[in-house]
Amino acid sequence: MTNLKTITRALSIAVVGAICVGTAGEALAEYPNNTLRITVPWRAGGGTDSVARALATEMEKISGQAVLVENVTGGSGTAGMLAVKNAKPDGYAMVLNGSADITAPIVFKNVPYSMDDYKCVGGVYATPTWIIANKEQGYKDFGDFVKAAKAAPGKLSLGVTALGTPDHVTADLLIKKYGIDVRVIPFNGGAPLKKALIGNQVNAGVLIAPVMLEEVKAGVANVLVAGGSLKSIKHAPLQNMATLKDHGIDQEISMIRGVYMPKATPDAVVEKAIEIVGEAAQSQSFKDFGDKFGFDPVWIPGKAFCEFMKSEDAAYRSIK
Image (tube, rainbow, N blue to C red; front, side, top):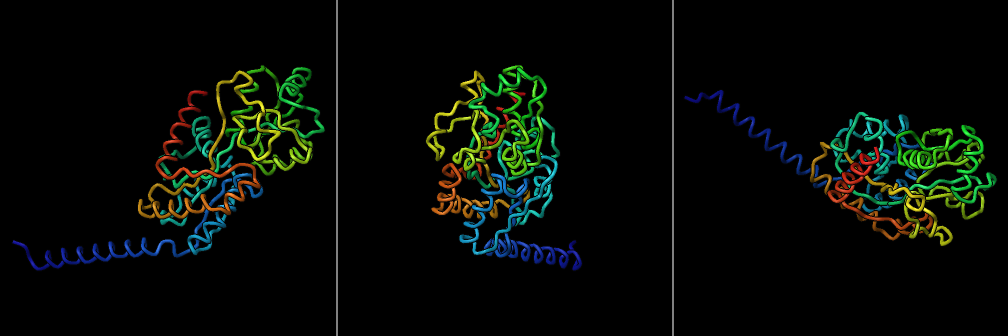
């Protein structure tokens, strides 16, 4: 026999449940109604940071909310990824990072997160890696760098943004291909490596294109080899640049910079974020940024972007 206390308790649970459902629905209907935060796991001034800030500007126009870009650096990008993994999954915490800057460390370094800790919002900018040297080094192509390295084993330096990143993989593939002895020096992101290259503090460096394109156009630096095709770059003299495949390496090292949210973020909120980011990525203003930065933007929404991430993970595991 059901007593009054049991009935009262059941009614209370039902009322609370109805209130929660209503509150969740209202929150979604109002989303976003607060500042959106995009974490960049690298220092300000690098390629990923530049893409994030250009995208954030468009997202502000579309969402009607402020979009704050925060640089959370450390651990070769790990600190920023962990910050968003552990953030409140309410739709206001996002991370913008390169696809390979996530998958390569997962494969090669066993970092404390996996792709299962995030939901994909979408990919917005695709570019390959490339090796660059200050023009004063005198290298016209990667063959010149190889000759110099073989003439002075252990003396030449090759900078990378961080260990376990796509640029580090690019460097490693070429070093093994030619059997050269060079010092690989990790920097905490593209911005400090760019500074070192401009200052002629390293013999060459591996970055994600199109970082340093302006220096190349100005004749300050030379591109020695690219991790993938540069046919779509907004600088005709580089469109037929030699790639890893031209050097007998059957790999393409490129990445897509994209947006992710914590895995517990409600699907309906993620879908709304996909709408906002997708509209920003396909806006004329973001395309204008791409024209100036070096490549046209892309838009790969949610699930399709996650499928790309899986294929990229598999590609890196085949290298390992």
